[in-house]
Length: 577
Image 1 (spheres, one colour):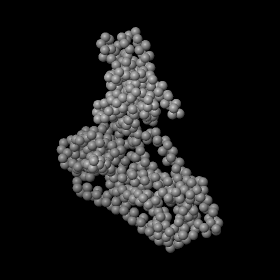
Image 2 (tube, rainbow, N blue to C red):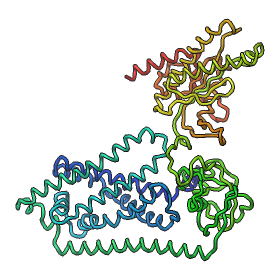
Image 3 (cartoon, rainbow, N blue to C red):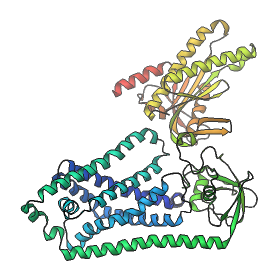
Image 4 (cartoon, helix red, strand yellow):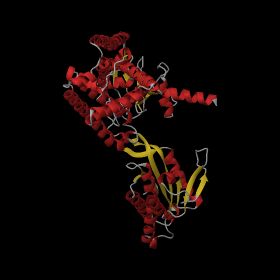
């Protein structure tokens, strides 16, 4: 038990990279920013509403365990941002990554005065600066409102870019993108409007001497001497932060000088192209520097394996894979030591290799404008249908006649799939794979697949009636339906690339279809599909079957007559409504 837990922890640690730590810290900080922005938006109601909102805001974020996590995330994120400035060797990415880096590095310098004035002022002198005091300082006592506005916009844009890079390859991103975009526009707009409306209210009230007496006391805003002390601390910390940025830039220069003195190495791409680069660059960075197309869906983050290369010749002198690189290679089932990730491999001697993914799929400096075509994990429902008795059908017919009947069968099946929201995907002999869920949520995808199975049975009845004079016996079929996470993308070579799905869920659907022969039924539906579609538990007879490649038996539902599936789905929809 302990050994298992230890191995799982080791596997998890291999999967973690500095980028992922920075992402987690960034998500925590972005949650704080969203909370703060929503609090600002209350200014569209009144300053009193802002004060009520900030009470709950601080109640959560200043709760000691939360505060520890928040400040640790802030310091870690800032430190990793400075390290990213040092580590990045190539700034010619045709994405918003350099913009994200510059915006992120500017935030600490801009926010320093606000954090010191509010949080350190409270800690050292017991100041109670809330919205009335801050809005007074921004709109009346000084002209810092523009600095704060710029800070709010920069923090929001930086966070949104990070969220975009995190979510863009997720299965739900295409469906969620319009709502995320709406939130990305509305939240900062309402926030800035709230600050403006609150500031106008404070400007009007500040003319009242009684308001000043109650809201600008020494306990609330402090003395001039205390403000001067906080300003000196702010200046010192800002200078220290700028000094760290300067050290990172100096370290970059020292590294570049050391690499040039260390000599150049030749990288041969296996297609006659050879470039010379300083030691220390990754293979992907070398491709970017010389504008050579190199597939990399994740942009060099070691979150995918599309930049994989195979080393030609001796690979014994190469640096050992990092934990993150080893994890990714293991995840994709690669144990060959000659296969490496171009974004992680930093050769120290001449190297020859070739890319495993064709560069026209997506170059390293291109945006993933069509991630679903490149490779994406998402929930789909797979429906396999196969024509029974096609061998006997061909024995007494001319080849053309056999092809004609099989095509009519596949045409009828495809029509039923399309009418119910699915997509015919692969045609293998007299069988077909159809996919559901490319543009629907899991529940609707399962219901569409079940209705498509009923539609297939109806279409085949019509076909049997049409071809009755030419068939010795009616055309029969078997259907297998299963849903789960699969990988979808373009698979193939050169002009023979097709869009398809790969994964255990597809394989199981094929096994279930084949199992209809032994169970003498028209369709077999997995329990996963039955449950997700919302069919009643007693709607179909249950049976446990052994699936090749699985250790445990699998619960399935046997469908003797596929036509009844449509009525079952309609009934479940009425119950849900």
